[in-house]
Image (tube, helix red, strand yellow):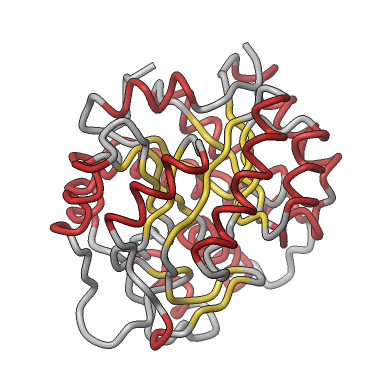
Length: 309
């Protein structure tokens, strides 16, 4: 088995009612929990690395962790750069062995976004790497990506069609109401399904991507709050909305916040119940198991991707 691109994964998902989970990784336990879940569920898998993760864990360590996961589990895995803000970081990840990169030019005007995306596409495709881009802006905060609610902008369907045609991008992240981080909008979570359907109808062969799609499971929020600290206003996208979106071209769903909550909740619980314990293996082991259970739930019950390999 090997590092692979998303081409085959997305081709299968695009004609089916399921999506591939793209899970953010930061350390060994997170990688292990995710890949163990994917192996049990027999599901395709994308492990993605953000700018913050690259800075924290360092690229060489992350690449080797993913390579070790492939050797250990026998899975094909796509290694993806999440939110590459410029050409240089995308090029560096291509050169480092990533099989997929996201160039996020959504903060730029339309024409500048196209120009940046085309530059990355030309370099990545020449090296056998696929490219995801973003059109529209999501609210919320993720690493160095910060867009407040007032400037959040849903993706325009006609612009999406023009963007894909002019850039040759392999997949497109769109803004239809999700939010980076724990959902903090006023009112109920909302996804613009009519907009999603229109975009999919205009570019039916383009895999669409949903960022900010953590459902923020109450189990983990409540446990975090019970065992120290308060997570105010945490509200995720309802799981049924994610399942519905997979029917209209959503082939990749990004999940990060739920991983952090699952891991933090279990570590807090263990340390409160075992205050004299100081062996990291004792609390990181249960945290890894919590991530595995949560990822299995996502793959099986939210993304509908079990047994799709």
